[in-house]
Length: 106
Image 1 (cartoon, rainbow, N blue to C red):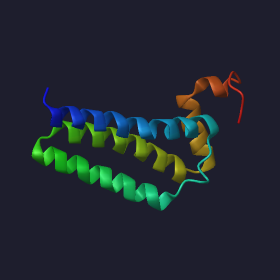
Image 2: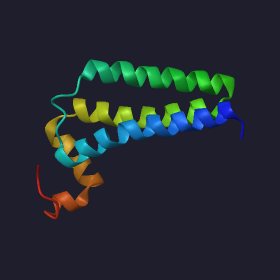
Image 3: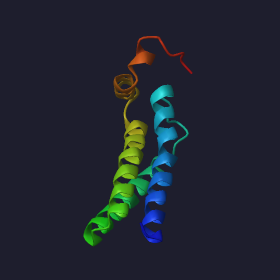
């Protein structure tokens, strides 16, 4: 594996890992009050455009990185804009233990 490809896959790992804790925290706490909706609109748009760019170039590190980050940041944006009731339903579906009372509430 050559250096540019390795750097691309390492960037994929770092970018993906950076959004995972925020998404999981939202699932666990159901709280999104401190998240900027405009920042996530711009972020989601940027990832969609980078993914399109990578697709046009046939560059898999760009495609995989940005598709994954688009999914995670898109999830965060959806959780931010959903009404509380729908946010609870989605989070309960993703973390059924909390709904069952097995995980302490924040």
